[in-house]
Amino acid sequence: MAVFLNTFLPDSDASSKLQVVDEGLVKLSAESESSPYKLIQKADIKAILKIRKPFAHKGTYGHALIIAGALKTMGAALLCAKGCLYGGAGLTTVSVPESGLNALNTVLPEAMYLGRSNLIKIKSLKKYNAFAIGPGLGKLFESVCIIEELVVLKVPVVVDADALNILSTREDLLMHLAKDSIFTPHLKEFDNLFGKHKTWWERLQTARIMAKKLGSVIVLKNQYTFIVDQQGDVMINPTGNPAMAQGGMGDVLTGLITAYIAQGYSAKAAAILGCYFHGKAGDELAESHYNITASQLAEQIPKTVKGFLK
Ligand SMILES: NC(=O)C1=CN([C@@H]2O[C@H](COP(=O)(O)OP(=O)(O)OC[C@H]3O[C@@H](n4cnc5c(N)ncnc54)[C@H](O)[C@@H]3O)[C@@H](O)[C@H]2O)[C@@H](O)CC1
Ligand SMILES: Nc1ncnc2c1ncn2[C@@H]1O[C@H](COP(=O)(O)OP(=O)(O)O)[C@@H](O)[C@H]1O
Image (cartoon, rainbow, N blue to C red; front, side, top):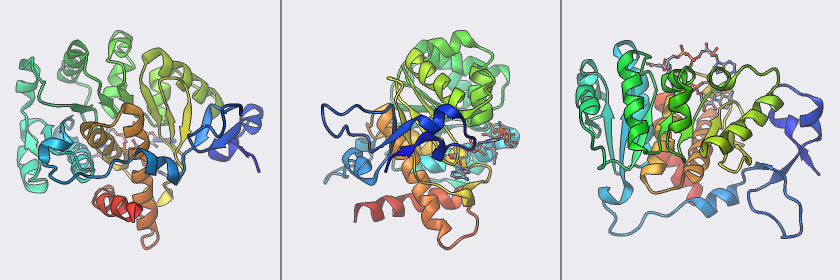
C-alpha cells in the first residue's frame, strides 16, 4: 500500500496528501518512476555502514574539530563533542573558550583542546578532516570571524544552532560556504535562515531548492527528520521518539554526523547514518525510559550500532 508524505508531517495539506513516498533509497527497477521522497530502511543503513577494519588505529577514523560553546552554554559544546567521541571519530578536538577548558578535561578526557585565539590566528586547520560549528557558540563578533575563516578555507562544515543564526543575517557567507557542508536546522532555525513558511510542504520545497543551490545537505530536524541531498531528494528518517524531546539532543546529533564525516563518509551518508543511529539509540532507551537526556543518548550510540550489526 502506498505511503503518503503527510504521514511524516505535523500538519497536512492537499499537496503532501498526494505525494507518494518510496520505501528505501534504492530504485526498484530502471523503468519505475521514483519519488523524490524516500523512507530510509534498515537495508539502506546496512549498505552504507562500513565495518571497522583489523589493524585500524585512531588515524584511520579521522580527526574532527568542533567549534562550539560560550561561557553559559559550554554544555552544548560538551554534548556535541560527546556525540563525536561516541560516534567513533579517531580523534576529537574541541575549540571552546578558555573558561571551558577545565570542564572539557574533566567531563571528556578523550577530547583535545584548541584555544579560540589560536583558531582565529592559525590559517592552517589542515590536520582536521571534519569540522562542526555552532552548538552554544553565541553570536558574538568572534563567532562571525570564525565562520568567515571557514569560508575562506573552503572546507565543508557541519553547521548548527548559533552558526545557522549568524548565517541567517549573512547571506554572503551562507552562499560561499564550501559545497558538501551539512546544515542541521530545527524548524525555527530553518525559517530564520530561509524565510517564514506556513506549512511543512512549503518548507520542504524550499529545502529542496536551497540544498541544490548550496550544493550541500540540509537536515531539517523534527520527529521525522528530513535529509535533503544536493540533488534535492528527500530522505525521511524513521527513527526517534518523543522521549528525546529535551535540550542538547541536537548538539549530540551534530557531533555524531561530524564523527561520520571524520570516518570518511560523504556528507549525505554521514547525515543519514547520524540521524538514523541518533533516533535508534533514542528508541532503544525509550523501551525502558520515559524520557532521555542527551548525555544518555550519546552513551547509547556504540551499543546501538553494535546491536544493529548483529
Ligand atoms: N547545555 C547547553 O549549554 C545547551 C545549549 N543549547 C544551545 O543554546 C543555544 C540556544 O538554544 P535555545 O533553545 O535558546 O534556542 P533554539 O533556537 O534552539 O530554540 C528556540 C525555540 O524554538 C522552538 N523549537 C525548536 N524546535 C522546534 C520544533 N521542531 N518545532 C517547533 N518549535 C521548535 C523551541 O520551543 C525553542 O524554545 C543554541 O546554541 C543551543 O545549541 C541547547 O542546545 C540546549 C543545551
Ligand atoms: N519527538 C521527537 N521525535 C523524534 N526525535 C526528536 C523528537 N524531539 C526531538 N527529537 C530530536 O532531537 C533533536 C533536537 O534538536 P534541536 O532542536 O537542535 O535541540 P538542541 O538545540 O536542544 O540540541 C533533533 O535531532 C530531533 O530530531
